[in-house]
Length: 317
Image 1 (cartoon, one colour):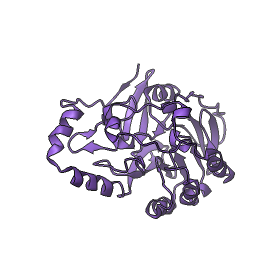
Image 2 (tube, rainbow, N blue to C red):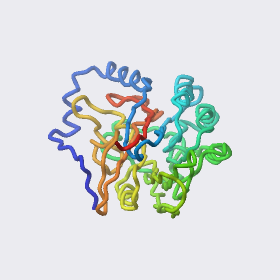
Image 3 (cartoon, rainbow, N blue to C red):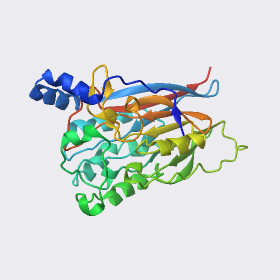
């Protein structure tokens, strides 16, 4: 069984905190959540994973756009991310926020599709949003119902085909790939399909010839939902870093407390950010993005602003 290096102690339950915050008028809280959901930002992380004097590498991690049709603000934010000059893109899924938003997703990601990258799917790449009681989300992780009970399907095939036809992005859902960057960096990337759909199967990292000329060999793991079983498998297999999304940073977080739920089986204190994870005697880094969007049926965020993440890999000095 894995253990995290950071496992915060929670004295008061999330429910008690919600009740304590009940003095805030519901209308004001809703307005605050709606405004917060539109405050797109960028989180920067710097990791010394490269050898001395090596040129830095910039990784852009995007996920959970939940983009609805004609959302110009979000489309422009995502398009402008290309201006950060990333060397590699990691997309952890849940791109569209509706059945009619595939073209908008492709427009938003168009500049990023020209940059080498990988992607994995989330359930909302396949299924449209379903109306639900927002308080249900705060009780426990949501469950994915059978296909017959879900809303209509999204044209994921067309969307993913465009990703792949760019010639730069690689699908790594339950697959692995070996990619060369700048001729002196080899990336071994392994990913899973959405664990929230019970569709994940860890593929293992592809074998890389250690005698090859590449100066640097890194192992990236990519998954949509950071369930413990996926993190355990990736870390045990030697991942240098695992990229995940799905949690929305809790979507509804509280000041001085944080996320109420993670919508999976990791602790709420790890619902977003960079942290360490141990499994099978190994320790790796996990980056969980809070995501760019929110559930289209509950388009609110509090105290966990939407984000894209820039991970700068720098020399270890």
